[in-house]
Length: 240
Ligand code: ADE
Image 1 (cartoon, rainbow, N blue to C red):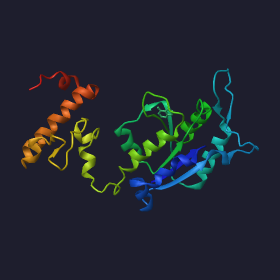
Image 2: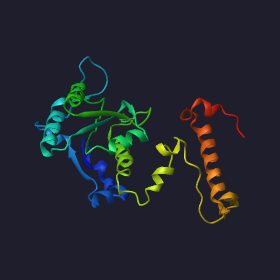
Image 3: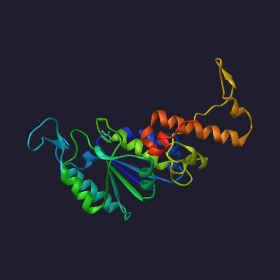
Image 4: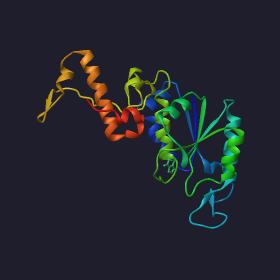
């Protein structure tokens, strides 16, 4: 997979060299290029923003540098581009969307700052490429960079060969094969820590009872923490 990131803060993306994503880059599973939007400005101050038409607080990112950036990226590779624009006005990011993005050959992240990017850039991307506007949640970050990092991490770990043990994809919270439940609690050695014991069933060696306990825990956690993830029938079911 090819990843291009356009930002006015390329330094935000240094952590991509670490951990699983860094390994995926070294292994050639992903090819990442971080681009400074200001490289596509032509004035002495390398200006990327201007005041909003119609008035109001803050600044808006000018369309011209973005247009040149997308033209240059398009020229650089024949892979079809899926443009990802992180914005609180986007569609909620979910594991399902992560799987969808993981199936694309090339993702281009357009990281906005200030009050956002001139809408004509977004409309141009919708016409010329595949466009996905994505929100990380109902809160406001200072720009798209942190959101892009989170989306990249969620996507890259789904690529074939990135996780040491692909089984972990099946059991974790929000995975499709797990009825959309939150993950059960996990324990490791020692069996007693500061007076707190590991649940007896996990020490029993009885696979059937362990599986039963885990699915009960996953359901109970989901019921108390994220009832919105459960269908009405399961949410209201009498507890046993
Ligand atoms: N940019 C600013 N806030 C954001 C959010 N909540 N999600 C995605 N991108 C953002």
